[in-house]
Length: 348
Image (cartoon, rainbow, N blue to C red; front, side, top):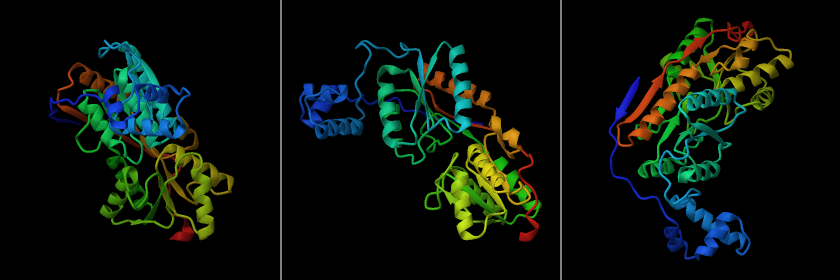
């Protein structure tokens, strides 16, 4: 499904070197030394200058002054990590599609850091790339910077989190597949479901928000005490089982943020002598390469199709920045394997 929203044609001017001089009151030489890492200014002064630059959205353009859009033939791809195999597999597909279109790909990892993401976007939009593909940090705190990039006429496409209809983006309809998975768990006797992954109950976003909404819709119960928040990846299993051991109980079924999180739970469960799904049912997301090997039930996303759609949207924006905003929702597929089964007999 594609949604289009009209784009305004009024564009703001990108902040200049002179703007930063005027704002900070420091000399041109001091500001140059701050960006180039040269001696001659104190660390506190350097940090003040760099902080002011981030706040107004200034970054030195490393290209020639007559730089024009399209000159670099590079597309920047900004992802939170590569530990989650979903991201590395998606990057590979994006790189293939970019190459077919005559573009090279450059990759930045934000480690979910607001500062790293902001610095990368400012740097790469100042002449290093022709457009950016961005998986926003979990907090979403740089949304004002995304707005600045758009106001400057710089093409960006957001992945997974769209912030309404402001930006071009690609979103996965996880809700339909997650509903199917919960109905299956309900049919085999589960009444409560826990969550392990990013986000928390103070500000539920992404899959946690969908899970809470669907459990209410299906009249199932959210296992809050059995849930483990703001954790994902290879450490999820250790953290979750430590919490459950201290509580003296574990959930009967867990929906996780990603396959990486689910596989971590699976691995730790097996190392403790538990059987999946006899002792606990585990559900992942993304169907990465390792999911099939452990028999993980999950949500499959066609990353090849996703990459083609992302690049198509970005190229369309590069050709015509004033075209309507384009948001495309892609389908997913429920993959049932052996990691989900009936509620343990002792819990019935």
